[in-house]
Image (cartoon, rainbow over all chains, first blue to last red; front, side, top):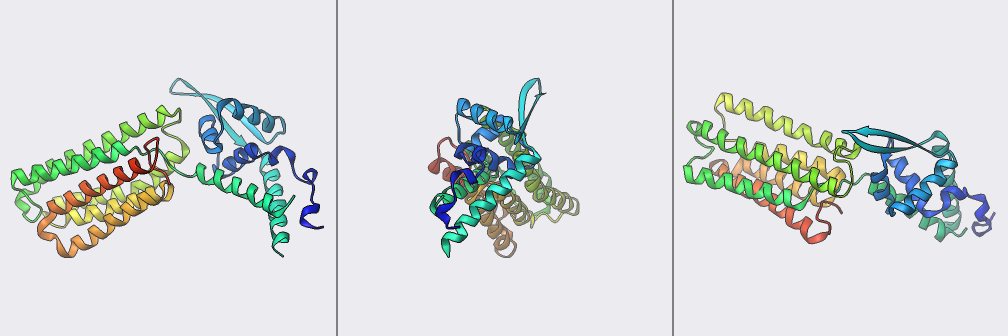
Length: 104
Length: 201
């Protein structure tokens, strides 16, 4: 298969969108999850945008959200599920494959 | 999908991962205040005519530099927490915990050496020891905070190394240049490079 022959359908559309890819990548880097604010800053998104993408990831079963109180302040913690981690690994493998084939 | 597009997506992954592991909590004003406090400590030693080459001055030196150290750490913690909270982030995030874990060993060794030198009266080598220990801690911070902290950490290590051989008679001067000057350098570097004023690449 030529590099260009790989269609968008071959990639995980949930992760493929850049904002969601940034969120998932940030979660992979932060073992144990991250707070809403930390993750939003790492992904470089606004509050509204971030919430929308986070909901899509949650609906796909890639992230899980836990709400708690720390020092009487509400804290939203987001973590990557095992399905999300698997999806990220697969996505990364596909991307690397495309880049390698392109270099040949 | 073309390889160029795939590379762009890989860049998104790399950037997001780097941002997640980059600590940006240290404000410029905390570094500048730490530098000013150290210069004040050196000034106090100069006014009191005390230096590290005399064991007779050990108690006065301990009082001056313990105060500088305590005030320095206190203002650093307060200003950092305020800066991080202003951005709506957690001051005790996982990243902050990792940074503290990277910084603490150098601080601990410095404290242990200080106690030993204080008890045995061998205070003349304390300034270069402090530079070496603090430099190690700042390099620990540099793992997460980037090149500015790495640069200043290396400067502390150099000052400590040369201090062991060359500046034994000028401990207060070494403290002024290193803890005073290098903190000011770090503060100015942060101020010059970025808005909001905090430590990042």
